Length: 441
Image 1 (cartoon, rainbow, N blue to C red):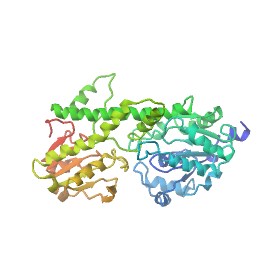
Image 2 (cartoon, rainbow, N blue to C red):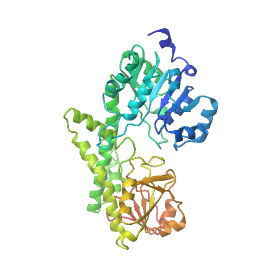
Image 3 (cartoon, one colour):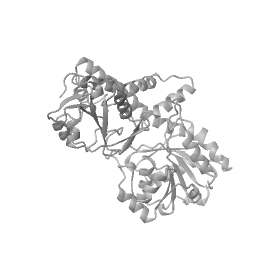
Image 4 (tube, rainbow, N blue to C red):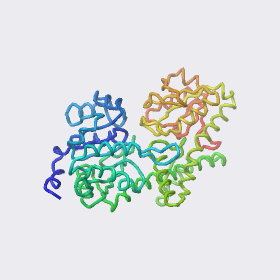
């Protein structure tokens, strides 16, 4: 390693980092890097995001507008849709989406397009770090060959690493830099580069022996949650059949000091990671003629939960009026509390199904101003007293901290609660809880 290589990470102020993809992963990472004293160039092809950030406006609840304004005005944060600034960076971090195709297989098109753009501009001694979730082998088999089209050799001329992101949107218990950071590299020189850099950023950095281990670590973490949440959702449906309150069962089981970790029911699994990453793993297993039956079954269960909820809501409403005459108000369409991300949210399937049954459906979400259902835009409505009183059923799909639960219980006729947020609260409403059996209200 030459003198330039040894010294490039000694002074934060002299390290220039490009973050490609400014979504729920890339933007928080960029803001963390700025706070740590690095000069950051954020690159995103979404002109709306670029304009928003340059105006000092954040589109992610975890990031305050004021922090964006300070970062932009300080000159330490350049936001652009142009890849050319890559030429002047020491480090390039890739945080682009890795969704699924319509066939359920990995869609690496965003990663491949970003890699091609990087390759046209990459310089000697630059470190490239992939943080997007993906299947084991991606860094070596997909990203490295594209980068080496530049005639620069990984491990000698340029350096390539994989470090899975572990950001949990809406979770204010842990700052990003407090979450242990897994790092890996294709060569010892690559490992040293990423380890030395991330030691400046994170409180704990864990070096693993290969990029494949690091890639598979992320898939294991999310598959573990995918399987357990799918199981507890199915278990909640059983509890309804048995007339036993699932929430009481979970509370009781949680008193065991070992061997049990509580997972909680909900309307289904959403977001970019949990419902997607396990299918990357399932696909990779299939390439090796191995059938991951737990993941296959969990995926089937996850897709059935919204339909089961629609059936329960319909049954409750039709005790009083036909479903096609009902006014239904949905509280929350984000896939989890206190975030604005509605990707893969079960709310979309539930709203679509209720609309197809002829119900009049509106929604309120303080973080999601509009969503698209069956190709049509729906806008969030104000949660007025009139709206609460008019609704034949209010369905709680997301337990945002801002939820006015007492107002809802005092003014609504019927509440269907998928998150147990009504526990301990009482009002005039008739309340039914997912997994509550007959012991509701």
